[in-house]
Amino acid sequence: MSDKKSSVIINNEVSDPIGNYVIDYLFAQKKETTFHDFKWTLDVTKDSQDFPKIIKDVYAFSNYGGGWLVLGVKENDRSDKDIKGKYVKIGLPEEYNLEDASLQEKINAYLEEPIGIEYVEFTKTIGTENRKFALVYIPPSSKLMTAKEDVKYKVGDKEKTAVIKDTVYTRRGTQSIVASDYEKELIKKRLTKEEYRLSILSGEPEEIHETIYSNLFEVTKLPEKVYLGKAKYKTFQESLEAVKKAHPSDPNFSLKYRTYEDKIITFANLNNLMNFHNDLVYPETIAQESVEEWLEDEDKEKIIIALLNKEVTDKAKRQGMRFDKDSRRLYYPMFPDQKERKEEWPSRYKGVMRKQVAKKKWYDKLKRTVYVHAAIRTGIMRIGTTFYLRLNLTMIVTEDGKTPMSGMKEGAIITGESYRIYNKGQLNLILFWINKLGNGTNVTVIGDFEISNEPVQTSMETGISWDIPTSDFKQIIEEYDAEVEQAKKDEESEADDEDEEEENYDF
Image (tube, rainbow, N blue to C red; front, side, top):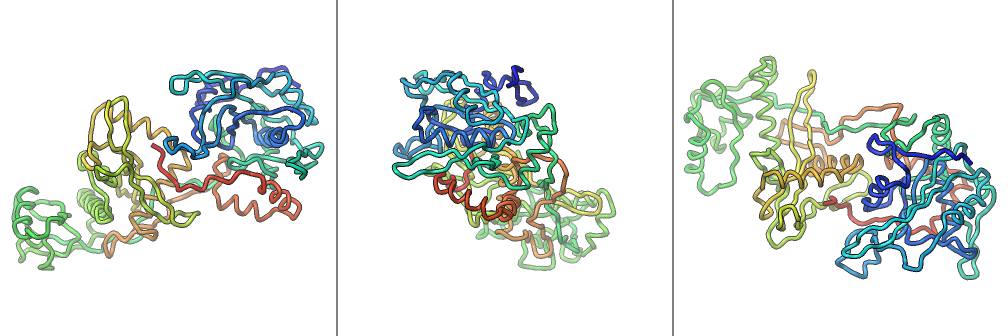
């Protein structure tokens, strides 16, 4: 066993794997990840049913590239409805005692090549009480680790197998599981790197094929023509008042035009007498021109893009969203008697899901309860000859579920909440918004203006293995041979159920 002190890299900082910085980082996590598990206690006694399963975690973490066990955290049994989240940080029992040397000895007894397990106990304030927790660090292995013997335990009179001899284990999602051939190759590639660090922590890419999704969606169909007419009114406000007066029974109209010289420019058919834009121009001046020709002129192109943006915003408003003109953000409103709002959407992998898009919450910084909403900024942009819809994720804070607030404190809330959304969450949110705009299909903004609901993507030969898409995991699972499949079934019969709760936006 090497005497060299191990380290990890988090946010470009070389850190002690059981130091305060790492402890704070892991303790702040709300759910288990590929690189850490929550446990309440760790029983290393001879007849322990839990310790053999911990040995499987040791093999899996070590092959994967290292990981942690955070002790003192229980799974939420939902007995107290006021306690939210899947896990509850309650602390270790007062009588709990575990010696570092004993843990090291018992774990290494199962391994062909000893590894430097590290253990530390620490205190955190929960409510008004100081409670004890502990952290176990399992470092990356220096070779492909396989179990040297079966590791068994008993449940009543029935004998169970936690680890199978000569089997390679790794981490997949939040599970310690038998490695596929593909994952074995990833482990071997990791072993070739002398200064390996977990890519999910350091940002260092691994030698894997990965698909990168963007927040751009291709415009597949553009309007072919634009309508022009000499404006009757000098300002937008005058036009607005005129339309209100002419259509008093229709308060929900939306003016979608821009001005150019002395003309109104719009995609709306100005020859249609039922279209209220017709009231804004002199009928004898109405004309049509080709959008393609307008795009050849730089100033006219800006007007076309502005009109496209107006149409996207109007489409979102028809889908039940509100638009804040000052911040140019779209969001779902709430009513005063609502504590949260959820919207259904057709998820890429799980069918129809419900996502939390707004929540009522108390903030100490404001000394009051406010509403926090998931929000987006939309924008049409041109790259070369192709147009794209860009979706930028953001948030908005409102006083009453509808009226936006602004200021340094509100901005700090938005910034803080945004930091909680990671890569996978970003993609899910982007897909949520585009599928809400298109009702699960390509977005038909207006009849001749359509946008794909598939994000623009590219492929790379380097990436982060923890971010492999669910579709790729499915292929890996399908390639298992009969022996691995049986081992997986045995493990799944004992494993805790995956968290299948509805997918929420974490505020």
